[in-house]
Length: 177
Image 1: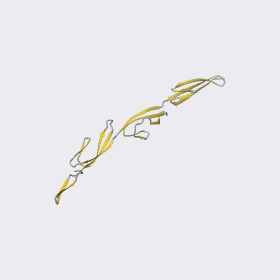
Image 2: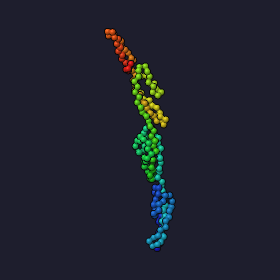
Image 3: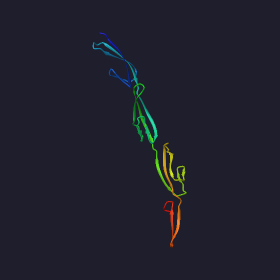
Image 4: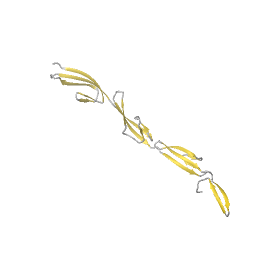
């Protein structure tokens, strides 16, 4: 009876099971077994272990963020993962660590008297209109104030006499006068 000798090669991701032993590193491994006739059997394995990749995508965004998975997030998220295949054919896992900073949008209605001015941030408005002012928060996000500014027309009046009474009819402006 003669002994048996075998040579194998294996390429695997992260680990490989060979002859009931788990291997985590590349290398040449030798195992001595017995044949059915009780002779030595030498098995040699050339093992290449390719590692999977794992990266964390740290993102800070204002208001919302659309990630590589196509999902738009409106709140912070640190549990989403996206699976890819790296150049060696092994898993590549991207984990999301997303911080969503708030943006603020407010509406400002102002009815003002003729001749007044409207002040919003560093802007001064003296005509009717809709104005949008953009400010930056301490976290670096844009926030907006939309102002609806309406100035009254000049206040005018007509004085008339009806018998012993003097009547004043006002128009323009905003009551109460």
